[in-house]
Length: 144
Length: 144
DNA sequence: ATTGATGCAAATGATTTGCACCGTG
DNA sequence: CACGGTGCAAATCATTTGCATCAAT
Image (cartoon, rainbow over all chains, first blue to last red; front, side, top):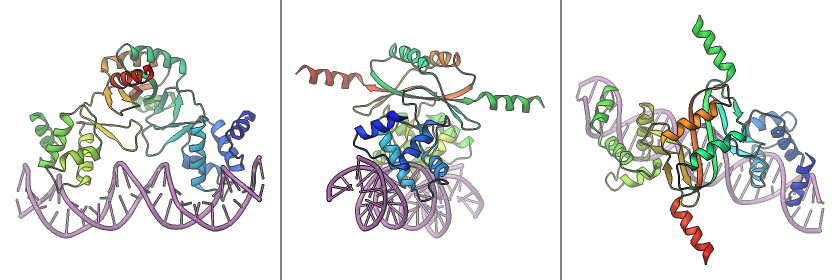
């Protein structure tokens, strides 16, 4: 939290209320919001804020490594304050996006390395399916 | 090849020269082309063809399950005539896109299932790194 | 005071859409 | 000859950019 202020200053970046607010949203949610979502969430507190500011801020945060950009297959990007490269789970029913522990990643990479000559440097892994809640709902429907 | 004609007809779709050409490009390449790439590749033979036609055809092929759409992180989609859901390798240096055998997928899914309650239905897996050729080039540069 | 940040509006670029005309079945 | 397909141009939509103004350092 405080370290972020430091990081911004270290990079010669100014600390503005808009930036703090956007960072704050990202740090206190697990829902992997889009630029639009962040914008709407903040429009109550910052009625004058521009969507462009949200985009510029996200771009900046991405560059200094404070957020990662996700493409889960929708028309727009989502953002994650957890920058460790970890696989994501996407519910095909309710569109929620969950994290998969990064420990899993190690095992996955081990497996992939067995089968390729590529020198791997990164990955984007999205697994689709029904989240526990939606799984229940579907079961209930089928029981009727 | 001939089976594709059958599939189109079965779905009440017309067989046009443009469609055949687009399907042909997709079947005879391993480079995972974008709509734009396909369009350019065919503009010699079909100078009057519209980019919109390429997009409409790809949409149609996607719907009947003859191609899959890839999002490797560029601004545009790429298309793959191999519709079996398999992981992809993307070279961060030359942007080529390779397939990873779908057998690998089984092991990856096994691993993921250990760690989630999601009922998995699909996945989009992109591994980034240096392809064998680019890996060599980099080594040579470093040796000088 | 500087210099980077903001907000607005206009620009971009991939993809989609509407529609009149054309070609397949 | 009926109806889906094509080509063109205009429309979308997320994201980016230019620029004058504003505020953090």
